[in-house]
Image 1 (cartoon, rainbow, N blue to C red):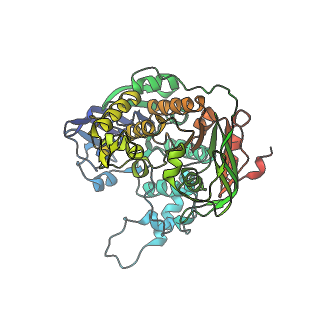
Image 2 (image 1 turned 90 degrees about the vertical axis):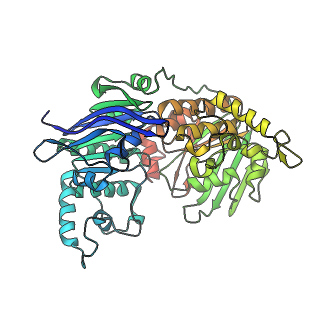
Image 3 (image 1 turned 180 degrees about the horizontal axis):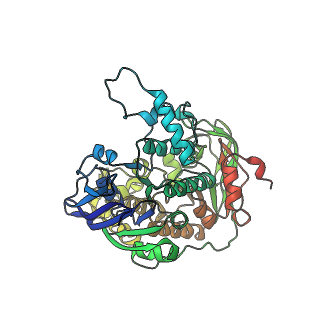
Amino acid sequence: MPDLVLRLSGITKRFGPLVANDGVDLDLHRGEVLALLGENGAGKTTLMNILFGHYVANSGEVSVAGEDGTLRPLPPGSPHAALAAGIGMVHQHFTLAENLTGLENIMLGTEPVLRLSRRTGAARKKVGAVMRESGLAVDLDVQVSRLTVGERQRVEILKALYRDARILVLDEPTAVLTPAEADGLFATIRALAAGGLAVIFISHKLGEVLAVSNRIAVLRGGRKVGEMATAGADRRGIAEMMVGRDVPASRRTPRERGRPLFELDRVSVGGGHRRGLEDASLAIAEGEIVGIAGVSGNGQAALAALAAGLARPASGAMRLFGAEVRGHDPRSFSRAGVARIPEDRHHDGVVGAMTVAENVALEEIREPRFQRGGFLRFGAIRARAEQAIRDYDVRCQGPEAPARLLSGGNIQKLILARVLDREPRLVLANQPTRGLDIGAQTEVHRRLLAARERGAGVLLISEDLDELMMLSDRISVIYAGRLSEALPAEGLDRGTLGLMMAGHAEEKAA
């Protein structure tokens, strides 16, 4: 086809006995937005790393159209060749130097190292033209550390377009954006595609996929299992293709609130290098989920640290299960019945070098069933892990497998098994489904709702408004370290929450 700009033919990639990609074929056309979907571990990231030259495929070929439209093989394992061919990638976690300005970040790596002076005038002129054509506006002279999350993402996209990208890969681009910023990004993607840019859009949010893409390709178990036009697709059909089975939606049923379990009364706390909390008040009762909406970096880390016993108030009062908390001791919080699902599952949730069995028993290791006289009872630890693997469908090579080999979704299941099987009274769920596929998301939601039905209180910190509105009984918005009043979820809508997340507190009354 004359508008074909990219073809992946028979891409196979093995890591030892693991087949990450198995004969994947994929085409991309000029002016098209192709959504690439799949479960965690389906092979999406591996495929994109092969496209960008980070990995070399065991077999298969990547071909990119030149200026004359002729497809030519791309040299394997060469990011430089990928960039020269017009392939740009915007990663989920930004790769910007925060101590440099937006213009300096965009120019980074585009000039010879031995050049004595930078040609900022020519670069500024070219970036200005790109901004006018794309609709991406950002102050190029402001240090990146002072830019909002949405502005940083614009810099990342401008960086790719400045290098004359004709193919743009966006990996979970809305993970840390407000609804308004996400809508603005979608408008930009449509404008860029209308101008001829080809886009590969990777996301786990099916609503976004349906809103912005033209075509959908689905990977499962390393293979491409199907394609469909977005115009004829629906969430249920996409989810079934992704996981190979029907995915029932979680449902929250009404119930009465019980006694207060966790209370903040005008609490302030410093956040170190992150934003802290200022004069925050909040109450979580038995049998309810209280959701915290907000753009990342507005004080969520300080709130999570308080709920986990990792920090104490600088002023104000904090009560746990009716007793005022004066110090901070995460071990005593855990023993009292607080379960923690941390934001960073890899860094704070598991010890990668330890086995699945050791990680499952980690918070209970001092209990008599796991140790006696200072000696570990490995049989009991293994039995606990085998039960967790069965009950939570943790897909691994067994209890002795290192935790670092698990996918993100399976690490999250391991953490859920460790903390929820103890039937905690209070659950801190901090970004519990970030980056998880639809099947893993549904399982996490089901477990949190089951804890609520059992009478536990849940503090749900999430940047996914659909998740918050589906699971939460009440929702509070956090902005610049301040918490709004927690209001019933049924009386809120995405527009109002989005305005509050962006700092428009006056919209709260409306």
